[in-house]
Each structure stands twice: as C-alpha cells, then as structure tokens.
Amino acid sequence: MIAVLSLLMVAVLFITAARVATIALVGTGMATESASFQARSALMGVGFTTAEAESVINHPVRRKIILWLMTFGNAGIITGVTSLLLGFVNAETDQAILRALILVIGLILLVILTRSRLLERALTRLTRWALSRFTSLETRDFAAMLRFSHDYGIIELQAEDGDWLIDRPLSLLGLPEEGVVILGLHRRNGDFFGAPTGHTTIHSGDTVIAYGRLDHLEELDQRHRGFTGDRAHREAVREQHEIIAELED
Image (tube, rainbow, N blue to C red):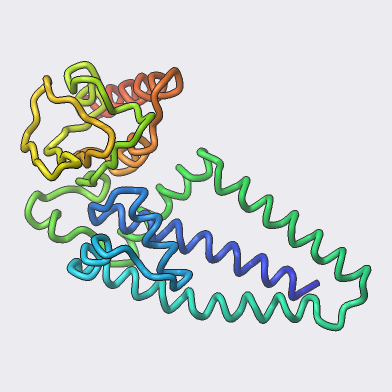
C-alpha cells in the first residue's frame, strides 16, 4: 500500500512540476499551449519540435527551466516505475486488485483536480509569487527593457478555430477594456502586422503578441467563442475597472 501511495505522490509532483514550469515559461513570453507542451515533453524526455526547440535553446531562462525539468523527470520516472513494481510484485490477487483500484481512483481524482479552474487560478497566483520571491526565473530581457512588474508581461496567443478572438475586428473585441493591448500579429502565411489597428481581424492560425496581466492573458488564450467567452470578457472588463478604481483612490 505504501508503494501505491508513493506512486500517487510522484504523480502529484509530476503534475505540480509541469504546472509550475508552464507558468514560468509563459512568463518568458511563450504561448500557454506551447509552454505546456514543452514542459510535459521535458518531464517525459520525449523531445521537442524543431521551431519550439530553438525558441527554448536560444533563451537562457527557458533553457534553465527545461534543464531542471529534464533532471527531475528522469528521477521521477525511475521512482514511479520502482513504486509500481513494489506495489504489485509478490502481492496476493485480492491485494493487487485493491491496490489497482486505489491507484485508478487516485489518478482520476488528480485529473479532476487539475481541471478545476478555481484551483488552477489559485495555483497560478501562488506559483508566480513563489517564483518572484524565491527564484530569479523572470523575463529579464523584457523587464530590463520595458520595466514590467511581475504581474504584467508579453506573451504569444495562438489563435485556433473556436477561439473567442478570431474572425472579428479588434475594435469589436474591446480588449483595451480588459487591460489587454495587441502589439503585433503574425499571420500563418508569415506576414507580420506591427501595432494592428481596430480594423485588423485575427484569423485561425495567427499568432497574437499581447501585453497585459499574465494570469489574464493565459485565460484569454484559452477563451472559447460563445456565451461562456462573452461572459469571461464581461468579467475581465469588470476586474479591470476595479483595478483602475483602486489605483485612482
């Protein structure tokens, strides 16, 4: 039983490490989806796509994050496999079934917890505070040049089918009311628009360079079209108004 609990603990550490690394990589300007993929790839040691590998290797902070993930991942996989073997080798049939059931239930609960938006937001804020408080993993290339605080920065948003951002002019999205500024736009055909106007429309496959609160930009990167997306927009506008009101007091 101890071996099964140890395996679940390794799973918790893996999930936490992947989430922390994703948040740190997003802080360096990577899109949320790309950062999540790179973090999980490094943990599992399965390699990277060529273009994203270059963006990691050429950035000193990203390179440091990935190096720590690869080291932790190798140790974690060995620990996990060892715990799994110890949990089921020489176990009676009834014990093996019980342990397998506990393991499956534990993993299902972990998956459910990782999909909790409330828990994700709390973990994101805690992780950002810890990274700024106890480490030097910050976007120093951006911070030194533009003097951002640890709450604000620039990231890339990957526009996909069904996203809230696409197929409408920027003037209709009302992003400035959310505290988001679109700095540039990479078309999927390679064209680049610097300082796009309100008439510019984001299409699926485009890469959007946006400035704003980092936790909010992560939410915007995952926002889908429809009622839930419009509601998220209204909530973001309300939060931005509250922030402005606090600063003006």
